[in-house]
Length: 186
Image (cartoon, rainbow, N blue to C red; front, side):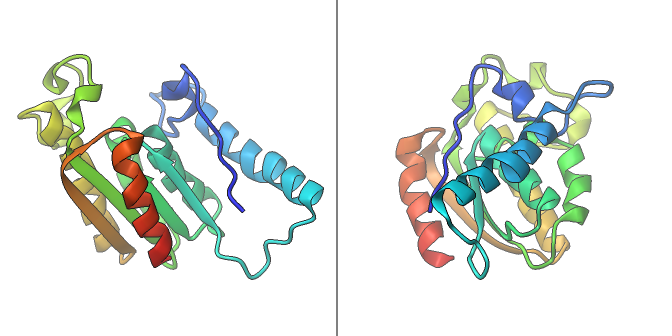
């Protein structure tokens, strides 16, 4: 069974589990609502039992950041698929939070070399330099954020599968075959 949840124009607030100081964490509320209210309601309605199942949480872009946070909050989602995850949006908080990820987790990450066009401006003008990511151009910035999390996952002894796509872009056309590849391997 697959349950898909879409985002809206406020996804930068709704899907960021690492908000700035003194901001409400709408993303954690959203995750908890999905897992504790929406999912049980659907399962009950369809009379489905998830015992002895392989539970997967997946997302792309901001949803990729959310998929990681969902597994941190709810470790039963041991299989994580993050396609072109916007880890830079949650940086550096996501790095510290990886310590809370179950050691039984499997993280499937992907990123492409042509994803930087999602930024309206040069990232060097938007994000703080102390993040220690590659600010040379927007594409390298995006890739460096994902690779930084990959390194941290390995340092935390979390099994990680990583797909790096030359000319991979930030859209469903490029994510679709990668998603299939990850799903087959789980």
